[in-house]
Length: 164
Image (cartoon, rainbow, N blue to C red):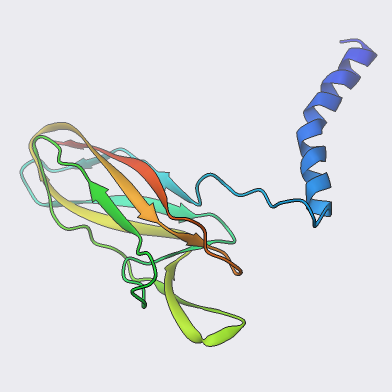
């Protein structure tokens, strides 16, 4: 690679980082908001066919954000919940949501919210016929940071498992 060509390739590779650095240094620039504040780690799982088993659904809230738990402390807050579609050969029971953690804002430390932040796991009890299965669903949540809450989002999920 010639010196000029290597310089141009290096310059093109550095442009996105330079643009981001310029935005970070400019407080007037609008903050870049992620498309999704929660990530789902779809992992194929195995269960015993015909017996009650529990599937684990692993999620992670992006750093700097939190989402309301499944049972927020105010009816005005939007709970995090999963809606699952029926799958042939699978009987899904009621989703088991984890307990949230208490969170309060510095401007009102007396009010405590019940939230998920970082990694959290939901558990889905199922009884399934032998074979490969996929359960489609949607995670509904509302993300907030220390200053504001954002419009509710929907995250499509797939629970993939084999019953043996």
